[in-house]
Amino acid sequence: MAAPPVRPRNDPGQYDDLADQWWSGRGGLAALSWIAAARMRHIPPAKKPGSPLLDMACGGGLLAPYLKGSGYRHIGVDQSPTATAIARDHCIEAARADVRQLPFRDQAFDVVVAGEVLEHVPDLAAVVGEACRVLRPGGTLVVDTIAATWFGRFTAITVAERLPAGPPKRLHDGALFVDRRRLVEIADRHGVHLTLNGLRPSAVDYVWWSLGRKAEVRMLSTPLTASLFQAVGTKRG
Image 1 (spheres, one colour):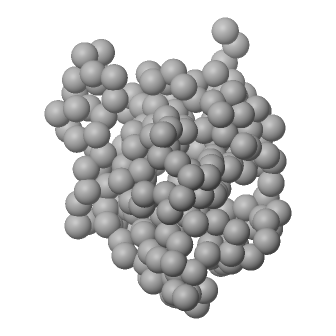
Image 2: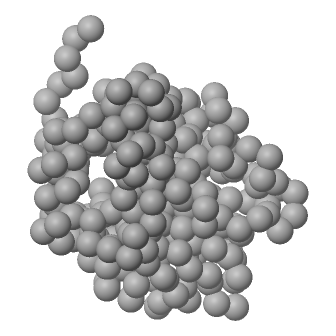
């Protein structure tokens, strides 16, 4: 198998290079599935069958197994045609779209999730604004991303890029990591008050996963939000 090309940091083409690993469980995108499981903990029960949920930057659709049987209509958008095709194979209504300009009317969704995308976008305000715009009053916004701190850059780039299941080398650009206070302020301007909590992998699970004795790693909540963190909020009426 030919080695993937060396791309600039934060080049979205890296996801296309690794398209065959979206669902492998052992490849370079394995941790994204673990984080998707943690994201699901903050998604409330569907208000009715077919309640619309928007999965921003859905990638290969890793949230799909956790939403199965939940009652939600799972709608995803991603800029990659490769990723959206894979997501559709996993029963997601996925289409290509720019998360800075979503092709949906105002207040169209009961839940909006933005998983592992905000640390890749140069215009944080535009993407958060769009997420809030398409969210209904009383709806839930769930975000996970990486904090713009020295610790966030150290753990997500210096350390994680050298570990099994860590992000592929050069996937992240630390200059785009998310200022937590600014994220909260932007969302609040759009009617969503966010509460933050940190995430970290279970060390015990990770050891067993590394030895091939465990299929996935639990992501545990922590008060420390200086690296990987979640932000959850409800849109005011």
